[in-house]
Length: 292
Image (tube, rainbow, N blue to C red; front, side, top):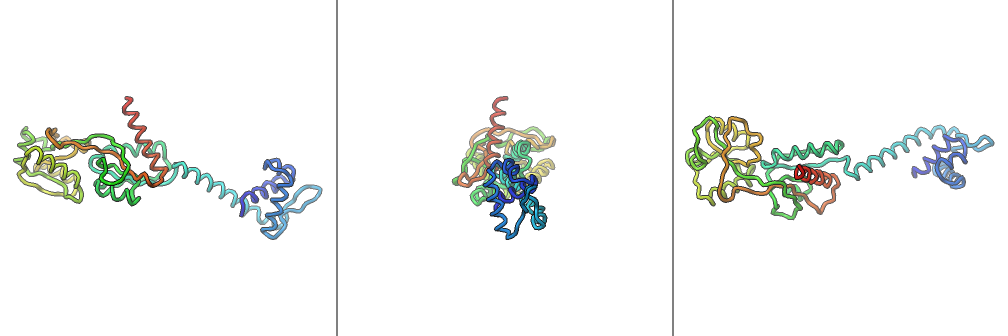
């Protein structure tokens, strides 16, 4: 059913006169007559009786009028929704983040939501190597990851992260080397912290450092709790220390292999207006920060 015919039907029913309805629709009276005749042939009934007093709805026309109004209204709502979707104002985006973007990613999402409140967002904590695969499979639209990615993804560097040593604050002052040789090093399992563990291994190797022992755990919160309890020390990204409690002492590290780039990555081969709006929002935030 052509909604243009239904709009002509509704306007003629409202005006009750072909000349007035044609003017309201910005068409000629013969064109309106043709549209009404076509609609009547499609529904196989007369919708108007014509006389000296204009066009009056027939009994069948009166019965169909509420349904025509409903269809036209739904059509208008559909077109409004389609316009919002095409502009990326409504829809959904899945975003991944890791340890280094633990603090940054939620801030970027908050900035985006202020401009696009109609977009639903999901934020999933995943290591970079998992995000790369999900980005290529379109299960994530944007990932906060180590850059450059090892696979064919577009990316935007955001900041440089660095390794730091965290130790219990209520302890004697010692150097990083002393802590590493006297206390166990607390680390994540590889399936959770593969990138961080590889960075730590490079740092230890390139700087000739040897650790007393290693203890593995599942998450950063457990590591922090174990460090505070005096069970061991940990090497973590500087960005994670934004949420470090006061019971932790943060010791900067020096030497080789202590830094890496963190940014966002996405599959530019897939069209996604919401994703592009999110990336533009992040670029806008970078420009604002640079201008301060």
